[in-house]
Image 1 (spheres, rainbow, N blue to C red):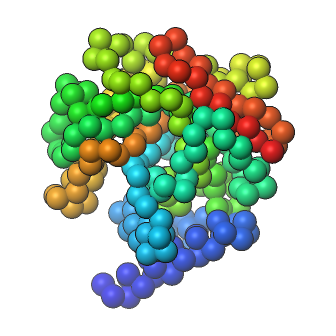
Image 2 (cartoon, rainbow, N blue to C red; image 1 turned 90 degrees about the vertical axis):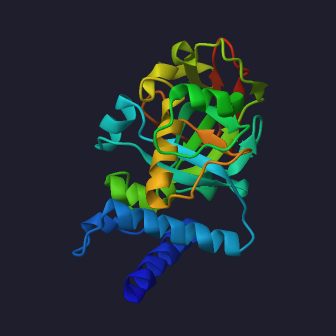
Length: 264
């Protein structure tokens, strides 16, 4: 077990170095030893532990590959999750330097802030909705620290579910009367619509990724919970779009305030 933990820590260190230096590494799943989903999450956890030891703060989670469009684009058939750190979260109108990242792509998502803890397994949608205090639109910027986006699910998981930044729009109180499954999100770049999708694109209902996440956390450790105050990204409602410098990215929907990001 000690040797395994040492190996996970070594891979986590290499991934963090690739992110810092912007020098990519070969996908882990192409190596002779291979990589299981369980060990990929252990590598992710080791990297998060290193970040927090350095002063970073955990503020929530992202759930990825929740829509069929994203699963087809990534060549996977199940969701994954990563951890949001405080230094990854930007407010609407922020500026992002493209050269700080490696191969960024953008996604339009619905994000939630929890008012109460959520512990799985076996949560109902009603229980999840009751725990959500605020909701907003979000732009997730994903990135890969590997040599290309031709990666397996385990590679993405080890790389913190490919999360780089989360741009959060103005939060509004959650209204249980809203049908967020029917909410149409529109992603535009410099005023031109490039992608769109409804909330139901993510596992049939944008609240369902929280059910999935709470269940996954409970399988890792029975005491693990989603905590009040956590921010959770529910996943892209469309396939991701390459992100270039010198553009403005916006996400609009009928009932939620818009969010935008300037890229230099």
